[in-house]
Image (cartoon, rainbow, N blue to C red):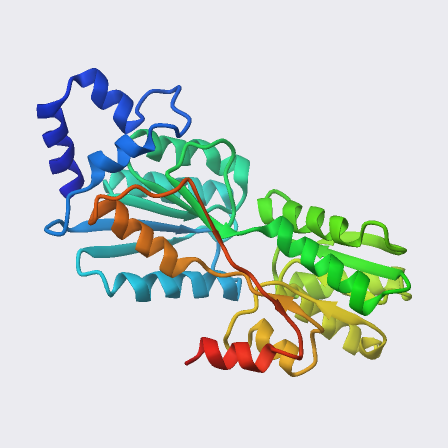
Amino acid sequence: MARRRAVAAVLTAATALSLTVACGTTSENSGQDNAGAQESTCGGSDGKYTIGMSQANVAEPYRQRMDDDIKAAAEQVPQFSVEFADAQQDNAKQVSDVENFLTKQIDLLIISPNEATPLTAVVAKAYNKGIPVIVLDRKVDGDAYTTWIGADNVEIGRTAGKYVAEKLLPNGGKVGEIRGLAGATPAKERGDGFREGIKGSNIEIVQSVDGDWLREKGQTQADALFKAHPDIQVLYAHNDPMAEGAYLAAKAAGIEKNMKFIGIDGLPIPSGGLKAVEQGRLSATLIYPTAGKEAVDTAKKLLVDCQDVPKEQTLKTELITIDNAATVYNEANG
């Protein structure tokens, strides 16, 4: 593979010690030497590169769209082939998936971790072998990876909170929250940001429950939530499928017109959040880019163009309401 040819070239030009430091193969490495790792893995435009994409699950439409975006972008780079693995929301399986990629000697790893802590060690293992690692959306602990790409989930939550405080409940009121998977960093960050957004208002979060990012579980959890707190006025869900599930639970109970629903993702597909806002089921959503195209662009910089990349790449988001939902959807679909 091109990566091994490049490493051999480095060996002829540097001492074994300098190679160890550059590739990040010491156990003490924490991500500070990734410029050297990038240099050692770049084989240029004549190489052929295998990328392993480890996905947390594809039950969420957002994650399937992420894989689709990676596949579409990679098809435009003749040097790339991509292998996909679905962890099915199972940390142990995702660790095994990455180990399998390492056995196959991939040239670069893209991963969207199911949960942060359980995936940290295997991500570090890949990185410390000199394999560039692109972390998407959800994070891992520490900094033993090449780059993270995603949106600012705290800011997304803060924007949602401000929207509720300023537009939906300016005089205060009661909110129910359906969180994502507890060990996934976006769940904590979207919750923390929302609380910052409503700070100083007379808004109370009466209960928070875990929906694990899934529509069906969101619907079940919302049903119990509404029975326990029938006076909820706004339901804030950490993604659009859970928000839609909550809407269905409220509709089944005949109370959907008594409350507003907010989600996150804003996928530009017929079943996504943009259409849900346009059609009136959700009051708002926030765009959360899949980062699929950006991940492939970054992989090309690392493997083909021999360029450095920043440690973090923060993508833009946008609040979607009935005022702009149709326009954003049409723009996203050409």
